[in-house]
Length: 165
Length: 223
View (tube, each protein chain N blue to C red):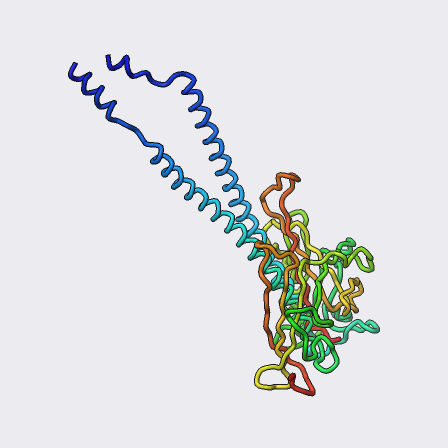
């Protein structure tokens, strides 16, 4: 009888969680889960960002490859000038995705999704044979998944009559 | 007495509780598998991308160096002239488009005079026996990889990538970036590597692919 009495009173005293406690516990759990989900989203976004950045770097390198061949005195794309903040004639380019078929009119219609601009300025130490070229690669789509504009700065050697102003 | 007062759950309560538990668990499991899937996809993506980048890197390096000719060996253009590479009495062809002649630009053969110390193309006269001076790069659709053959060293082709290459294509362009298949006019070569990851796109049922490209100017060539 005394045992039963004890058990009864014990059950009466076990009050369980209150609603407030349960809500707090759920909130803590939710915050943790949301943080994990957010972490996944951030990781995915960063991966895409990295992928887009490497594409941008390749395009910038392709442009350097091309600009190095040009004459300082005769080629308009290597004359002093240009801009990385606005499209200036001869100093911007939209790389196209070639399908590889020569003389195909449908070729050269799809862009690679980036616009390139460059700025040609005086080279280091006032050397007339050097020019500093800044190439900016801008993604056409500008959301959180694409890299912000990517800048590549390089010095190109050639022969020039004058130092850039 | 006390047992009488402990009433337990009713069947209805138990069923509701079970239902809620099931729903919550199902949601949790679904979310976990989703997370697991995107995690795996990410790893596979990165692996494929890395393989493609690596392939672009070494292929581009070889293309940039193609046609390097410091000792002014006779070139085929304008009139075919002969040199000692690849064999005595043949033209020095810095770029041979589509060497397997299957109509697909999925392969190319490059020649260059790059190896010191003798400076002669391919070594002593009549021999073309130095490494990396006459190479063939091709796509092997059977193994989904890019293969490399050093025509001077022989020994057959070697596989240079993992089996993740869906396609390889070279686009040859003239000075104005217009595609051409005339080797004499080629100034830029765009390498297009399509990598295939091991994850399946649930919408199409096909493996996910990604196109990586790099356009290089052939630096070694005189033009």
